[in-house]
Image (cartoon, rainbow, N blue to C red; front, side):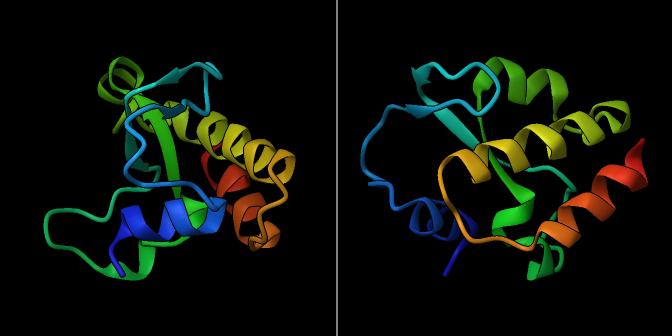
Amino acid sequence: MNYKEIYFNALGLDPFNIRQECELTGFLCMVDIHHIQRRGMGGSKQLDRIENLMALNRIDHDYLGEKQHFKSMLFRKHMQFLERNNVRFDKEYLLNQIKRYE
């Protein structure tokens, strides 16, 4: 299963629906599925997990993407989004990532 399938399956979303909710703005729009902690070009699939995958609109994805000082905020927002949508996830993993990047 690729990372996009992991994201859409975890949330019970239709991957063919071209408009999804941006986790930062809450708007329905075209989104990119973003690795909060990047896995690198052809890197390990260990980071292809719902705790590390977040739907962002293209502008936010381009702006926030690889900037370390936003990672804590992105993990925090993502955890809130998962909780609000009743998605099963490893909360300890996310809390450790938030602490790591604060």
